[in-house]
Length: 254
Length: 248
Image (tube, rainbow over all chains, first blue to last red; front, top):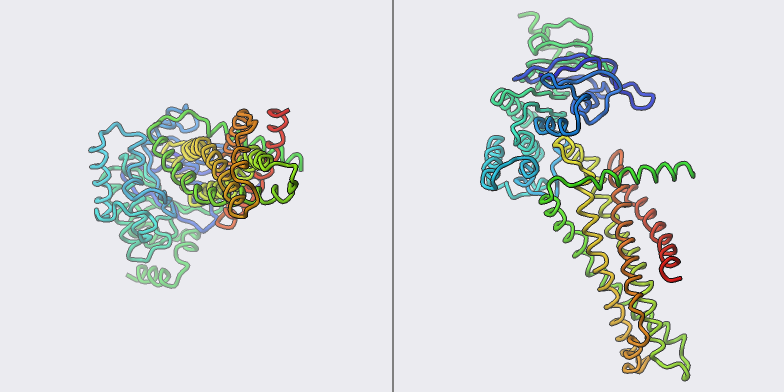
């Protein structure tokens, strides 16, 4: 479990995170939604330790990030996987080399075991073996996202973070990626935190949904509660489009 | 302006501190080092060869025309060409050209990695991006740039000889003997010292600008341009300092 308590983060005069308390539970897809500029990415990067906090604590199964030594942080990082918005695959490496990189650095495995692990992870995200030797530029956006997921899970992490994993993907591929993250989270019992704008994701895989607004947590609940909620922040954000207004009206009527 | 310069200098040295962190996985660094040798070193050979041959030729033509006197033997022209190539052209001018080619490559590669979050990806994995990305590039430059400079010296002298021969400007036998008259081997040491310092400047200054890019593709381009300007200034400045220290 990841516990976030009262975190604040400013960049110069700009106060981006204004005291957020939230728990992310194991085996759940925790979705963070909110408008652009609401602080979602800064929040995610702060939880990852990529931004130093001004105030507050983040603990991973009782281990407080700010109180750890360098070695402990390094060990913790090997328990984390991250899927970046733009996939962040290394262009100079092949697909297999990208997935293998964390193993080369941190795993005590033989070369054959590493090859087997890379193959398992890539096949788990449905990448065919004939693509293993391609470079990221030769893959579609959806395939790049799947490779990024394979790289994120290759060290069998306890915590998986995804920053807008569906951005730039067509609706069908976006659903495939959502399902994949959901399956992996439950299969490996990971604590998964996902930043997203995609309301389909909320309704597909939102075990736990947090709405952020101007650097604070405006609302939290499950995907079912999102549809039932009369909270003005949720209504303003989620039911802004005609599609969702009609869906909500139909649900209320039913 | 002075404050900005000192602030930048401070950041540069802090960046070097990150770069020179002890590598924990030497094998991975070694693999990356060999990739960089190919990318930064071998790919520059053709450019250096082309420029060196023609610069050597131009030096011979200019010197021969300016020393067109029956009392000045052709061996003197060869000495002037040799000293020009060994002392200045090969280490300094070729380093400035490499600053443009290799330096802008390093700055734009690292800048792109920064804006596409590849560096964040490394940090999340627990890998120090400054060290892992820059150290192999630095060692590739430190090893390969002096080799390129020696290569440039040899080709510059060859170009100078053939220009004199083809254009019938010199007596080739006398000219060739001039390449070996009163040669001071320390000049090679001086030249290679400069090449090594310039290689360090090229790798670290360009990496500093690329590593610290903020924004998008436009900022990557700007960082690449800024890095070439900064490298050129620094190389010219250190050229003066090293010449003063080593040849006085």
